[in-house]
Image (tube, rainbow, N blue to C red; front, side):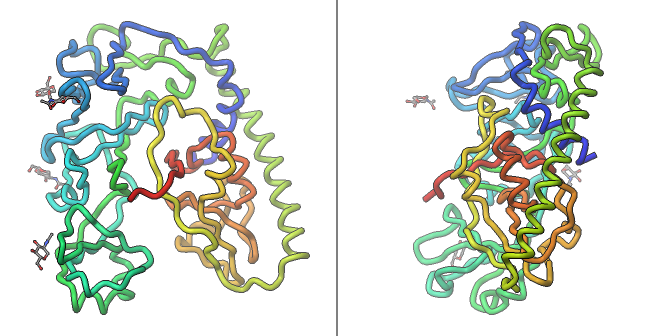
Length: 364
Ligand SMILES: *[C@@H]1O[C@H](CO)[C@@H](O)[C@H](O)[C@H]1NC(C)=O
Ligand SMILES: *[C@@H]1O[C@H](CO)[C@@H](O)[C@H](O)[C@H]1NC(C)=O
Ligand SMILES: *[C@@H]1O[C@H](CO)[C@@H](O)[C@H](O)[C@H]1NC(C)=O
Ligand SMILES: *[C@@H]1O[C@H](CO)[C@@H](O)[C@H](O)[C@H]1NC(C)=O
């Protein structure tokens, strides 16, 4: 399945110029501040049929878009990514970790959190924390003048054992990937509008009743959808073959020139990610943004944080010692640098999980 998505996304970058957007009244587009709200979302004061059930938002003071979750309360909507079918929501006080503590309960919502990871939160008096700790997140919104709240992945508890003696453990919480400025990303579980959005169409209800959806507009000149899929597949396979060849040549070159690296070595630091707006969607990243993603030189052990990741999903080559891998900071998926760099130039989304991180200057 992941492979098919890759074909499709590579190809989408090629055929997107063929695509046109149709405007429609059935999807009731409306703005709240600078945010476009349209199907499957609607504003609560619009007719029910403008949106899918449970996708109603409110617009406060004509600027703030609010999502109300039945068991977790109100959140500010930072971004709706229609193409990748996800929504970024934040705490109205910009303290998303506080919401994790209250318990994020998504039952009864059409959303799901992804990449959940268990974090340990500690409350330390300021003198107790060394300046630079890898993988530690400083939670400024929960900290005070004399104490700081920090969090780190629970699977690294051993490394921070000494901290847990001097700090107060205030909880272990399952949290999705989050960013203090942009909150967290939730994926839409329904309706199934992905392929419609990819094709540049408008997803909407099929008729005046029921929950069936259809896609209006999209690919120009009436090319049948099956043909588009066929073309996509063909071009996709061709590209994969080219990338595969490049990987192969690259590996040969590596073997000749590069035989002294024995350890995995993180060369550049993690980048801060921000969600992309709907207008960025089909675009790739520029060189400096790609370069900001961390590079790892694979050592002889070829060990990666996730043992299942031993093959690059783009070229399907197994990783070899001394190869240069690049990580997408948000989702921590690894690829050959040479493969993902080409990919990111066309499409900023991670080919595996479709996260669409983009580098920006670290937030203060
Ligand atoms: C969303 O719509 C449902 C049913 O139409 C309603 O019960 C709920 O209060 C609405 N939520 C908001 C935030 O307006
Ligand atoms: C609405 O927004 C304006 C300008 O952004 C601000 O001055 C005003 O205080 C806001 N009103 C409320 C009720 O939040
Ligand atoms: C979410 O809250 C509801 C109502 O309090 C509860 O029934 C349900 O078990 C909770 N779900 C989770 C995953 O905690
Ligand atoms: C952290 O500890 C301080 C006192 O040491 C306390 O005042 C503060 O409320 C604690 N913060 C949290 C989030 O537990």
